[in-house]
Amino acid sequence: MPISIALLLCIPLGFLFYFGARWGIRFVLGRFEQGERRAARLFGVFGASLIPLIWCTGLIEESFPGRLGTTIGIGFFAVATTGLLASILATLKERK
Image 1 (cartoon, rainbow, N blue to C red):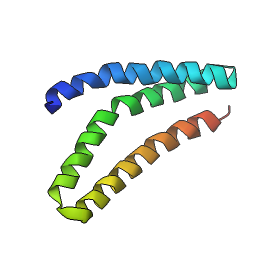
Image 2: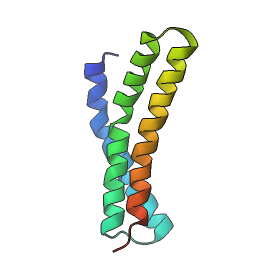
Image 3: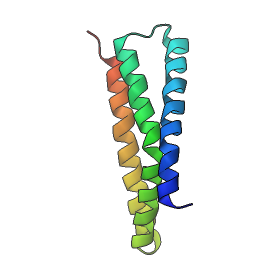
């Protein structure tokens, strides 16, 4: 599938992650205030950015041959995913 078509899937995937996070936060925490709304939005952004992250990881793995490319690609994906998820957790722990 070409990336131009795959990028169109980012929008529904982002909405799916947003509504899933919204339902999960309401179910687990029992509340849905400003901080929880922000965290659900960030989780939606994470869902929408998954396809470009996976595509970029594949490009990195193809650019460097062998085990080095795989290591760099997985490292890139892990750092990007950790950064996005850490911002979500920081938003949830934030109290006013």
